[in-house]
Length: 248
Image (cartoon, rainbow, N blue to C red; front, side, top):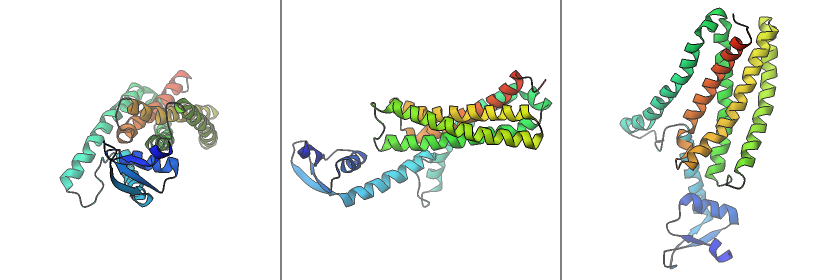
């Protein structure tokens, strides 16, 4: 086993090479071809460069700019790398817009909802992005495997619940004091709690689903997580307002 740890196949992906060095605390390793002949050597200094390169690549993918990240790239290449994800984001944003359109009567009757909805959606989006970043990093570094997948999901949901309760109490009290309405404060607190918990689910399940489908979870996850948190934020506020009779 020790011998296998120090032999690197010449066609091994550089991320897997970095993971093997990290896992077994290697300083150097021999590189072999398909016939087990020595073709070179890789050292920990080489791996440091690999880690930096992969980390930068993952950041670019997570932000939706693809492999393009050099400010000296031609404008047309940068445009092609970025615009497809902006268009995808535009299409997913229509889901949130359709929810608002369905409840426009409630907004007309209680205009303050139009002010509070973006707060719920925005905080939920940030919560989802936090979970997403942790999950994508865990996948990229092979910390998230089949054996601990659901334990990691449970952990992120517990974190989301704690965050949700904390933020919900703060915004609920703030809205109740600022607007003089305990019922509205309770409504916004409930909507915030729901959206942050949903954001926790989305932030961990979306990249896992993309990975299972054979796609790079760093590429498209943010678009779908944003769609979920925005839509749920609007739906939670407007749905609760209508269901509880705060707007009539």
